[in-house]
Length: 187
Image (cartoon, rainbow, N blue to C red):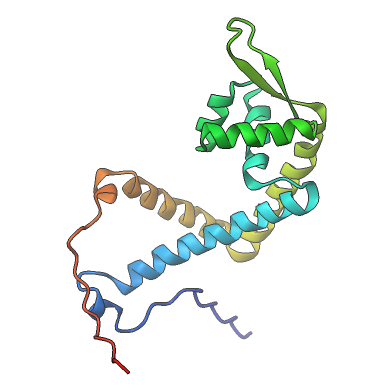
């Protein structure tokens, strides 16, 4: 039985990469770039479905899921914090979702200066259709690409990367690293 060819990563850097960037690693850069590209592709699949089928932006989809998942109405600032968006963006998005009948703003029970946001039955109906479809896609894509053992290995490797990415060492960067590029020919 012939063995299937391994697919090549989408992003490859030039063979002279390490000469141009002393101290860099061609393999590390390719890993980094391909992880980011893969994440973008996977999120893009979810975002396209939410937009095409329900007219929801990625942020609106996440806002509905955050509110519904909380199990109780939330203050707009709490939603904005969880989505990592500005208060201005939050207000605009909530206006849109409210006009569509997917959320409703309600007075806060103990502080009349505040509002709470709750998902409506129409919003829940969208989530009840959308979220299972997204999770089914996740399974289909991952199961088609990786065996259960490979999935376990991937999770372990991602956990290692996440642990290092969350450290001060990763945030500090490496300022002062050199670049050696050939001078451009002047025509």
